[in-house]
Image 1 (tube, rainbow, N blue to C red):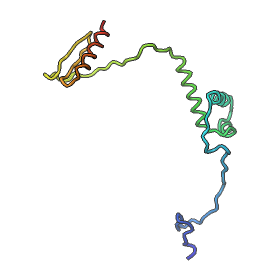
Image 2 (cartoon, rainbow, N blue to C red):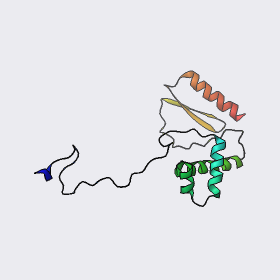
Image 3 (cartoon, helix red, strand yellow):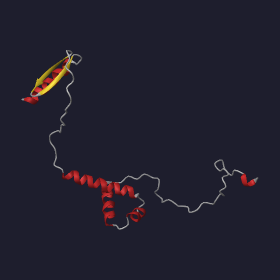
Length: 140
């Protein structure tokens, strides 16, 4: 009868004997605590990592995640690539192309400088005036 006894609330009899715990891993003194890294510290660690043969050992020595080191390296590469791009002074716009809806008597079409604006009867007057003025300013 003792062999079928439940030892904890989670144990059930499935024919597998309970075993003592195997290897116990003791976490480092800084594990579980979030640290704040300065940009200089990140750059220094990434530079050291690049000169290192074993990144995992390097990370363990400094008690830092290898994934975090790789993330910092990737972010550094992105920043370097972005620094190479020429600066843009003007805003970028993407042309919008759409099918024309069937014409109805509830709207009017206004063409200014090659652009066609369809204004429905429910639109606010001040909004329609602002759109037409913006098109006229852009056409001149």
